Image 1 (cartoon, rainbow, N blue to C red):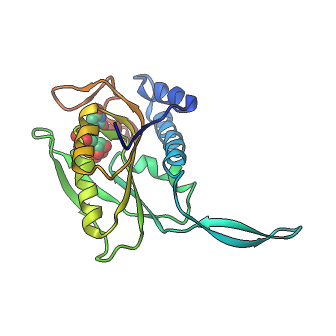
Image 2: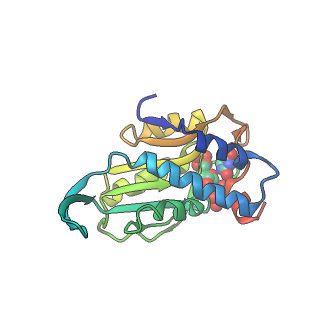
Image 3: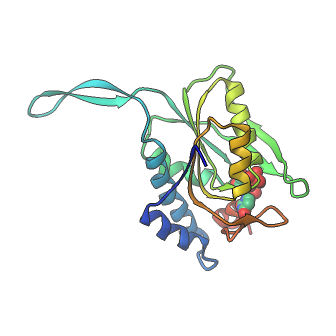
Amino acid sequence: MSNVYESTHPLVAHKITRLRDISTLSKKFRELVREISALMAYEATADLLVAPREVETPMAKTTGYELKEPIGLVPILRAGLGMVEGVWGLMPSAEVWHIGLYRDERTLKPVSYYNKLPIAPTVSVCLILDPMLATGGSAVATVDILKKWGVNKIKFVGILAAPEGITALQEAHPDVPIHIATIDDHLNDIGYIVPGLGDAGDRQFGTG
Ligand code: PRP
Ligand code: URA
């Protein structure tokens, strides 16, 4: 699969296993989502552009680098919210733009309920944050929104994906790299990832 990057990092594998565990409660679950998200963002941002910047150390002047392009973090509500803190900690100057979508339980199609993007884009790179790529409908709809907004450098950063979701996102938006901690086996007949971790929103927010 081109443009799909599945993590091979041992720390990610270890934390994913604890995240999946049915006995992991909300507080620990949120901690793990935050930590895995930071590790995934580190991997996903390896090709960000930098510009040279002069810096004066206590010893001498030298040339360092700073991030060149304004970055937007785009969590898909609700479950993507838990990924923000870990990623934002690495790039505190990023803007955070929330997109509210939920899956209709019957059709599994995304339904939009929140979007406050201003008319003109304020960032040039967007990282979409959502732990779950299941049918891919929510991710495809979010990329549609961001491209319409005028942003063309977009990456999807997630935790678990079903092969069906990867295929759907790649077919709709082959230019969007998918950075995912683990690709699971399949979707079940109600659209849940198997083996998965259950409902990522409910497990983070204690609403299951
Ligand atoms: C979950 C998840 C994704 C979506 C993935 O959200 O966080 O946004 O499902 O499914 P898809 O790939 O089939 O679109 P959900 O609709 O359960 O809403 P929530 O985060 O508010 O619980
Ligand atoms: N959303 C979730 O939270 N879990 C799944 O397995 C699929 C979609």
